[in-house]
Amino acid sequence: MTVTMKPVPRSLITIDLGAIRHNVRTLVGLLDGAELWAIVKADAYGHGALDVGRVALESGATTLGVATLAEALELRWELPAARIVVLGPTSQAQAAEARRAKLELCVPRDDVPEGIRAHLKLDTGMGRWGLSEVAAPGSDVVGLMSHFAAADSDPTFTEEQLARFLAATSSHAQLERHIANSAGTLRHPAAHLDAVRCGIALYGISPFGTDPAADGLRPALRWESFVALVKTLEPGDSTGYGRRFVASAPTRIGIVPVGYADGFRRDMTGTEVVVGGARAKVIGTVSMDALAIALPDTAAEGDSVTLVGNGVLLEEHARVSGTIAYEVACGIVPRATRSEREVIDE
Image (cartoon, rainbow, N blue to C red; front, side, top):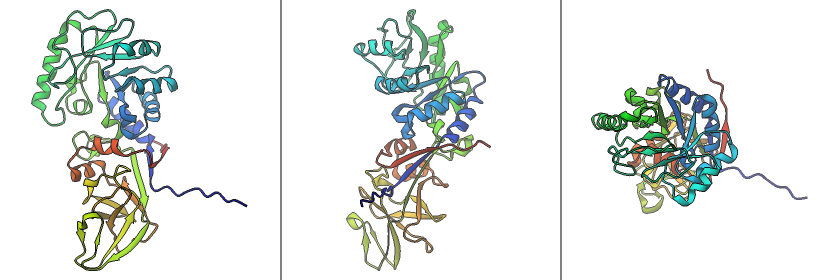
């Protein structure tokens, strides 16, 4: 007789779709009639574009935004009636496919493809894609847009960008105008205009690198693993490559089977996780498939380790690694087993 055993996952990611719903409703509540566009590019910042997109539309968002034609086509297959806008540049060769799929395109130049609803993009200070001015929009142009460069950190420049955008589009107020990202939506109400494009805030991650609860947002991602091995380092013993941690006293450590190949970055050494309800510091060098933690006294082999969630914020990990929470979230790779769950809103 052959017995097939289901392997125990090295780590598990849970996406709380109830938190997504809450965040959508919170953002919609700020808009005073403007539309919320849910940005689900990069697989919804690692949260699952299809699941997030469905919940966002059910909860008050009117439109889904992605970066590429390929991302849009994947969603179109599952969401045939959804309004989907491709925010990134597309080639003329892709226009026929976009037309067949009834997608909308953001166009950073004058050559708008025929028969496709288009949004002309202006460069008001981001210094990337976009026109310097609006000429005479053709009949296929339904919107005018720009993008904030520093809405999370520079309110003066953000107001300058908004003023430039309003001046450039004032004679085309019949078109849908949109410029605000998550930070702009939360801090600059005058930028709400006809629609806002929110990504990071949908997922309960702060665009300011602070606690998202300050803006009424709930983190949706939870990442868990377990203590696979417990050992005691004696004085002079080390753990991990490069001997970056050398014990100065007897030290109980736990080895967790997650590393930078899973998205727990090498430069997150020194951050904290939760073991058995207590905070534990990541020590030594994070390797490709494992990391070490200094164990609380009561922790044991097999105990659950919360890498994100249970009070551990992506924003904390980002500060330790010197980056932004967007990058940490997008870097959690698919070899971690994923699941989705609903929670009932309070």
